[in-house]
Image 1 (cartoon, rainbow, N blue to C red):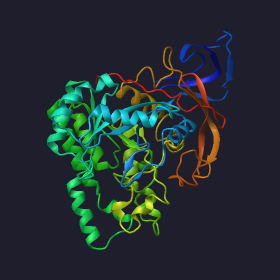
Image 2 (image 1 turned 45 degrees about the vertical axis):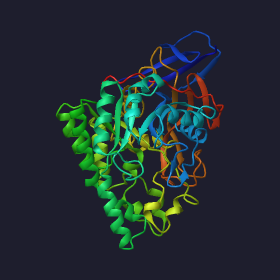
Image 3 (image 1 turned 135 degrees about the vertical axis):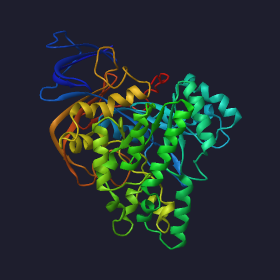
Image 4 (image 1 turned 60 degrees about the vertical axis):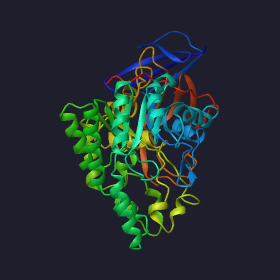
Length: 460
């Protein structure tokens, strides 16, 4: 197999930064050292650039049915955007349909992905129907390569599970080496608030946030954490948005519970003011839980810096402004929930986090690459630049600049969350398992070249 030598770069892992050359033999890193002299089939000069592990986004929704439509990125366009942004691995949510076995649900998602994938990928199982049969099937998920499940505490009547289901699933998962994930919002309270708002004639996008207040997230977060303790099962709370919910997570951690949390790029960089934009513009920013306040943004930066929050993901769930978001033109509750971001995560958090000195570059790698790999059964194969790991390497130019725009991004959506923002620090080359898939603006990956990742059982 071909060899590639990357010379003169500076490696940045979560716990170290040092100058070194990297030799890639086939799909793995075979040597790291200063001034490696071995001849290689390909030589890349990384002088003046950093070598960072390929990004891992553990929260995405590609080709996902929702609210009468389907998210606009499939496993080709979503992967293309990810690769241009320096992400080489992601874990998508396989949504179980009512009455369906987990095995059948996984086949549906494999059919969506296998022939289109350009980066490596895995699946979480999103449970919507836990019955006697699927409870027997749940411990078998690791044999299918899936070692994480998701349970929704919101979207009443569609995805939401009751506390009994939540507790039983956690308990089985904990005994089976499976990580339980929760979407933590009190769906019953939200359903009441939405009904009251619509009855009062309040239909604009701003009411999406007003009917999903931060206390609904905080209460559900605390409840899920308590249940995880009772079930003796590790818990991962997805897309955390606000100080009050993070406080619940921090309390659980202080009590010695194995509880972890993620936040998403948009929660650092958008706020309620965006939901309040004139006309229907606020619909672009409708996601759940909703974007919060400037105060919450700062609380999230503090929480990722001190380790309370372990991961930055995207919850990439794109719906076009025209033709999809406008399904809720006259009723905010019908606006498809979700925002794009799989392409933007790495450079937005570098520019707004590292450059603004809110986090170090090593912490940035930890949040975007290493911790996702460790928590979801991929480390040290992924998430680090070390001998023996997959050669998922991104060359990062801290001086490169661009203006973010839907006109130039590679995702299949007609708007960008960060439109018009000027940023510094960009990927220039992206290697996935030793294959150069993005080279200075040129996309080189073939559809179907991405690989499904069978993940290890969780050991936390």
